[in-house]
Amino acid sequence: MRWISAVAGLAVLAMTVGSILRNLVVTRGLGSALVRVLWRMTRWLLRRASAPLRGYEARDRFLAWLAPIVLLVMLWSWLAGLLLGYGLLMYGISGLSWTDSFREAGSSLFTLGFASSARSRLNVLDFVAAASGPVVIALQIAYLPTLYGAYNRRELEVTLLESRVSPPAWGPELLARQALVGTVDELRGLYEDWERLAADIGETHTNYPVLLSFRSPRPYRSWVVALIAVMDAAAMHISLAPTAATVPAARLMLRSGFTALRDIARVVHIPFDPDPRPDSPLRLTFEEYAEAVAHVQRAGFSLERSAAQSWPHFRGWRVNYENIAYELAHSTDAVPALWTGDRDFPSTPRAPQRPTDRRPQEPPVR
Image 1 (spheres, rainbow, N blue to C red):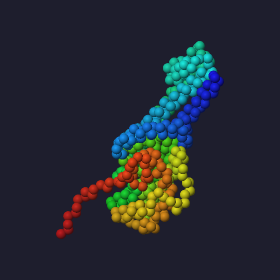
Image 2 (cartoon, rainbow, N blue to C red):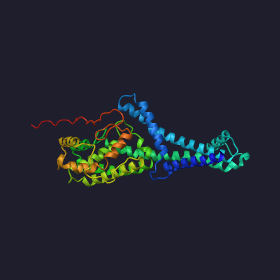
Image 3 (tube, rainbow, N blue to C red):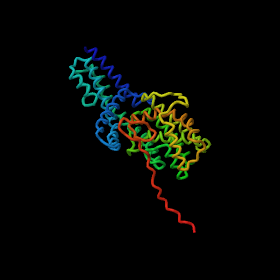
Image 4 (cartoon, rainbow, N blue to C red):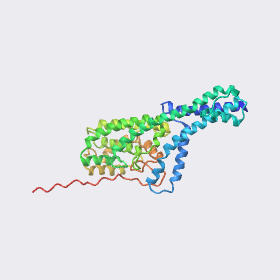
């Protein structure tokens, strides 16, 4: 019985330490089954608690607690795993009872006691356990500045996007708003900024998947929805005006965007085709696309191709990211926005509200 306990303790310690290393130390986007289970359980509980609420804003307030709770539960799960592992191991290699073994493990793990001369065979294990607790807590504390640094970089660009298109962001409205104010050529800078941000998201959100659940400070902002909007705007821009000066920047942004989404998909196990055919079907219909083309044309966007002519080009770009983007918007319970797929909760896609034009009228020329 004691040998079985010792082997079980070593197995629990190996799994716990492996989870800690995969999440906090090894920067390869390895992920962890423990964290995925904790995330699903916490999300389910919060969704159940928010189910009676009406309106997306109330639901968003509940879901904002998802990432912080997962972080705390991760820490306590690791400490509980270490306590269980050391307790089983101490019981297996000593003559102590179950109660004394776990008291010894807890006292050492949380540095509340010290090794006793009467238990000299446990001295080494006591010292290792005493080092484990502070190391895990220190790693978690050092982990938070990295998380919030990546979060702040992401949300800065999402907030800046609000000056170009009201939340929730929508690609065609982004193009239309720039056409209305005569700043279409300025989209080059936006595409360049989001090319770099997409690469940053791909790196940070694969190494630290809990960032996927960190919500924006305002309910109708969402990093997933914003990224989809900028990618859709870039794909429409290339498809409708292939000779525009912003096309090279738009192409680079799109490639950076769907590369980042594919990196994230590998970590969170979203299936995708790494080399889709340009004529593969989309969940977005041609009728929806044609309405969007008419929308940007009414705003004054110069078209070089019609909706029918540009559709194969737009579809060839969107097929690279649509499925992954929709699944991420669904799994993160992002704000219901146009062209972002369905949600688990009852919702109607919300269109961005265009500000009222309050420019003073020019006096008539006499």
